[in-house]
Image (cartoon, rainbow, N blue to C red; front, top):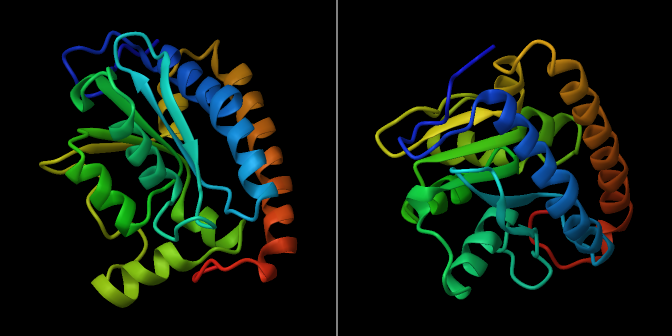
Length: 207
């Protein structure tokens, strides 16, 4: 069993607890919003904030590029986070992104003061499984970075994938966690098909 916790003295979560909390946030909070967002013509990306103390969800959002092309899932979440009074400060929160954040969202997470983020899908997944190559293309064209070229542990934050967290979970818990991962993958594949089928008619600059 792993006792590894996320990089915060306030966190009491083991990887088993953290994995369950992250998957639950996607299943019960992000995906319902994303279904609505895709139906309105938006991409499949979403994000959530969870308490480091117990893994409970504070706020969730999804992509809203049909309103503003800057409202990626992560940036839209940060916008809403600043609009809602009484939420915990960034140092008490886990930042979850369904897909590895693009360069804009990486910067936004940094400027907003978060010391961590967790992602479910990778940049390569966005390109290869969801036909959205812009994250990797911008990193290459603007910053000359190849896939994986930015530092996932740096002076501002530490990034971990949900897959890595599950690898650190108790062995007995991993089969059930991986079954949930498979179900989430399947739902995002269906949502991606819906987005791709309808994206020609929307006004998002980088579809």
